[in-house]
Structures are given as C-alpha cells and as structure tokens.
Image 1 (cartoon, helix red, strand yellow):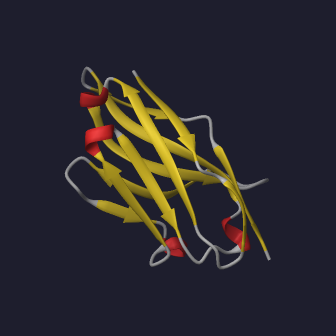
Image 2 (cartoon, rainbow, N blue to C red):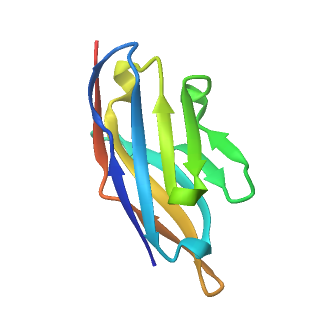
Length: 119
C-alpha cells in the first residue's frame, strides 16, 4: 500500500500563491502516477493535476497556466504550485497515488489540506 501525507494549505488572498506538498511512503516502487484532486463544498471531487511515472502531465482546464505539478522522485514527494489563485479554487485538496497491487491498479488518497482563497 501507499500512504500519503499532505501539507501546505492555508488562507490566501486572490492573486496569491501557495505550494502544496505530498510525501509518499510504503510501496513506492509500485506507484504509476501521482496527482492532486480537490473537493469544494457541495461539489464532487475533481482532478486538478496528475503526473505519470513516464513524465506525462495533465491539468484541469481551469488551472492550466496557473498551477504546476512537480515531482521529487528522490524524496518521494509531489508538489502542486498554485499561482494566481482565485476564490473558486477554494476547496480541500487531496493528494492521490495510483499504484499497482499485483496486477490491480489501486488508488490512495491523503487526508486532505484546506485551501481558502479570499476575494
């Protein structure tokens, strides 16, 4: 299994920046991709950004050009660099890892970190 611990959320004014961090532990070698999801009150959890082991990245359209996902493989850490934050970015952000358990692709989430953007 893979365990994930996020940090770095907080309160920021619109236009500001935050950096989220996620440290992975456990079956690191089985990880196929890592990413970030978010869930705002009353809404479904949605993908924000994802980075695969092969180096491909994918972003939600609303964050393209503002957010960057970066991985530090030496320290088993993934970051989400968030610039030009908007009030609609307010949500609980969850780190995610897709990993293989045998031949099954499993998903693991961290406990979440709150990001609040004030207008």
